Amino acid sequence: MQNVQGFSKDFLWGGAIAANQAEGAYDADGKGLSTADMVPYFDKKDYVNLKELMHVTSDSIQKAMAHSSAEGYPKRYGIDFYHRFKEDIALFAELGLKVFRLSINWPRIFPNGDDLTPNEEGLRFYDEVFDELRKNNIEPLVTLSHYEMPMNLVLNYGGWAGREVIEHFVRYADTVMNRYKDKVKYWLTFNEINTTIIEPFTGGGIVEDRVDNVMQASYQALHHQFVASSAVTKLAREINPEFKIGCMLARMIHYPATSKPEDVLQAQIDNQLNLLHTDVQVRGSYPPYMARYWAEHGVSVHMEPGDLDMLKQHTVDFISFSYYTSLVSAVNPEEYGVTGGNLYSTIRNPNLPRTEWGWQLDPIGLRVALKEMYDRYQLPLFVVENGLGARDTVEADGSIQDDYRIDYFRQHIQQMKEAVKDGVDLMGYTSWGVIDIISASTSEMSKRYGFIYVDQDDHGKGTLNRYKKKSFGWYQKVIASNGEDL
Ligand code: BG6
Image (cartoon, rainbow, N blue to C red):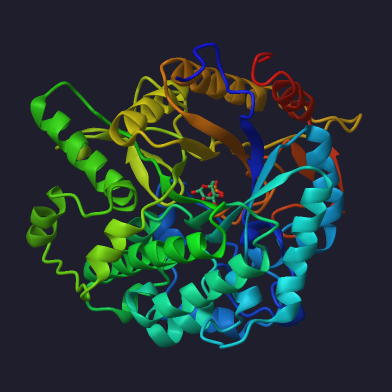
């Protein structure tokens, strides 16, 4: 039985980052180019249509490939975690993190993706990172693929729409899982696997102007990712039976705009399209509702013999997800205002406050999401992303008074605690961007998530010095009290 009092005593309090938003060193020590290295900094006129603004095309890729410096491409320089990870891990230890979520930058290990032997220098880097974490009693939680596909696989295989990519991904996973089998226990296969449908380049390495039918290519790519994820889960259990393998969904919980049955039905459809991913990775088969959806949208996913069996046999041990906001569904969306997200936009919910970037703040939605997912799957859950992107000001005395961030976390953790009391089996929580990093969607530095401030602006200027924000002391206290002192 769950502890009705609150978080379990071995609750994994932590923080998260992704390689492409933090490491920098985009071409150091043999690393190949990744999808993230293709996205330039651009001026934001509005945050509602970001997806259109950040659109990656054949032309923009050509330009990016010819651009042989990090200037103007913030994810290429990140926050220099590649050279400063010891200093950063020392701060994470001081914060009291029990777990640190990071990703391995795939093209650091296999620069072209289809190489047959790995890049030793890339492997050495993660050895050092994991050793430093272990030395500080911090458990690594590793994402194998967090928007960092090698560009060669995009250009020459059609991204994840190409079946051969499964084999290359499995070779990569085999390499790192064997290498780090005594250093890493918790693994996630794909970050926010549903991004492949929402933003096919970021999630699936699909260049939209290179395919005839984007939706068809995206669902085909998603199928390949499902099969790859199961193949890696199978392999992981052979490499080390102690490993725990999770899937990772951007949980986009949809509320109906009104109590009109049409809106309720629309919200149900939107929720199903989101939960499709966990349905496959947890239950081991495509849910029945997808057949009609695909037929009505002219999508026909090619499956090889053995694929469905692979999905059935090798499901995950736990479910991880990101939660930032709730969304709204309506049959007549044009009747409502629109607001921003990162790779999506949604209908305005008049009951919720919004951030400068248009994200609607809904702590109760996290409790709803946790309860609903536990009801549906009854598998341990792990919140691996949650946080507030906000502009911070450094005061004259050098302090950063981010009370808004403390409020945000307090409310979300409070709701998470309620969900645990409601009986949800929750393993842990890693706040997003535990240290300020480059934004995934806008490539801004000024959209900050961290408890640790990094002195760098949107154009890469600054000392890169790290400073503790007010929220640092607050989160430290939360962890030390196992979530009691909020
Ligand atoms: C998630 C991604 O969607 O949202 C992260 O997994 C990302 O990589 C986070 O950083 C916040 O989004 P953004 O665009 O504000 O950085």
